Length: 438
Image 1: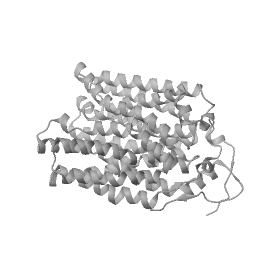
Image 2 (image 1 turned 90 degrees about the vertical axis):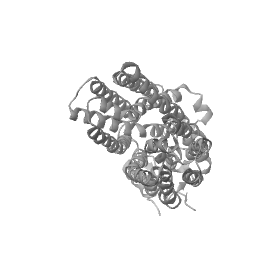
Image 3 (image 1 turned 135 degrees about the vertical axis):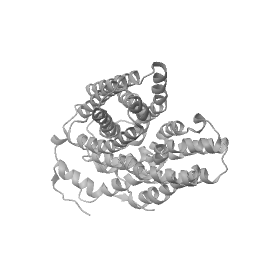
Image 4 (image 1 turned 45 degrees about the vertical axis):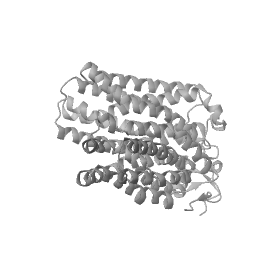
């Protein structure tokens, strides 16, 4: 495959990126969506059947907070390996033992030692096939189209959840709770692993991929130098604040709707809209990031999220027409989907692709703490006040702080150029070197 030796406009560069890296992005959607993230998404389906089968309490069978914490805490290790080995090898090294762990969940006699031991192992091993390595693969191929590529891959979790959740539920209620883990192992072995092995490629010479497109001076800094700058931690705080608000809300979405007076059937329908809105938000958010200055998009999305949470305050305080509730939920879903792309996009653009895995995963480690703590915080506020109103107010305040953090981040760095106004870049005279050996 060869590319023209003439200077390419921005649109031509993006076409070339999709021509060379589109296969990796498309298969990464299935690899990521059918991997460890699916265990987190379907974890709530296992709770009641596991309680009934074992006689354990809710807190004893609820392992999803621990999984999220471990996936985030071990992310910097996975990110560092992806930077050094390549994303594809790192993901495969995680998926193979992860599928074994899921199978052991189904086959071993379960007591608390084996149950918690396998849960810990799945969180640690699963981090090697979680969000960071997949985004590392994307950033090695994409620059002008990075937002769309991040959005495409990230939407895989919602797309695969729509398919897998009813299948897992059917297996659990027909063959027992352990059968659900066999279904998840099947998704890993039949969808995720083949997608990574046969569909994804690592771009070897990352410095040739982006050329000078990482416009920030921070792109030339080492990991240690970046981690010593307040600016990096200001941005990491913005991710933390958004995660605190959105994960707490998502964990209590159904109770918030039920408290507002909706029936279970209507609340379930509105909850389904949330999944669809998240997919749309990831794709739309990624597209906007490619066409408009990223800092303006980040601030706008945070403000939109805060406004949506303001609508939720009205919902929590009394009866609100169903169409207002649906609009508020869709706005939160769209905004949360868009926010999920922003973190990876900022790290790629501000600090370049070389140490992307390490820097991105370190920022996400903070959000892992928020993802574990905020659902409990929302619940505690609900128990103390008798309503979700103040929880939504706190969430809206956190989103305003996130927007302010992005503003400070922007004011202390280089000017954010309009992607559409960037000058043409000389293209390579041949396709980038890639590896896809099994």
